[in-house]
Picture 1 (tube, one colour):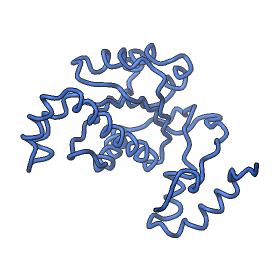
Picture 2 (cartoon, helix red, strand yellow):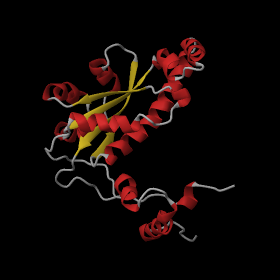
Picture 3 (tube, helix red, strand yellow):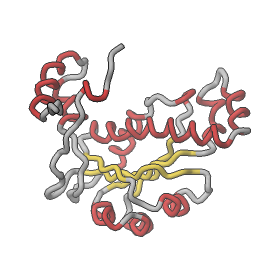
Picture 4 (cartoon, one colour):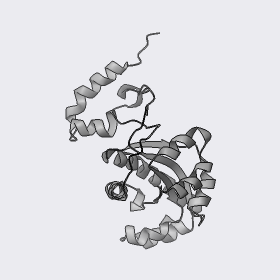
Length: 217
């Protein structure tokens, strides 16, 4: 059987061919996507509070169901907060999390519906009351929309010239108890943030081609 798997050269050729079809400048495409990598080590260069706020000010425009915006973020920066976080990280993620200048804990607010009258004013009270009666639907909406926001958040970190290291290896319930003790949040992802350190990258693994994942009907 013929192997139709595209080579990395084929994918690079495709990217070069279609780069000018995008409104975003080629260097910005590279910064946000092609040359961006998941960092596994970080330098000691600090990430400022102004940078953190600028990232959020950009990514707050991510689309969410009914503008619900359920994502909540705890930015862990102080040594004391790091000490509280590290025991909940898996062993393989603990060292790099300890060296990252900032660690973002991204969680879905399971009580996001209380904000609906403010963020969705033309029908917010109706949606708030409806969602209050359906825990399952509310939780699903929170996870989906927070997931959309998380994708935008990673792009926002890259837009600030920083590397993002998203991770799923941690005790989500333990982190929620530690950093969101009200019991109303579900921790979804933890993201290390900073300038890359020594030997920060693994070899890039292959990406699937357009023809392998998409159909135009």
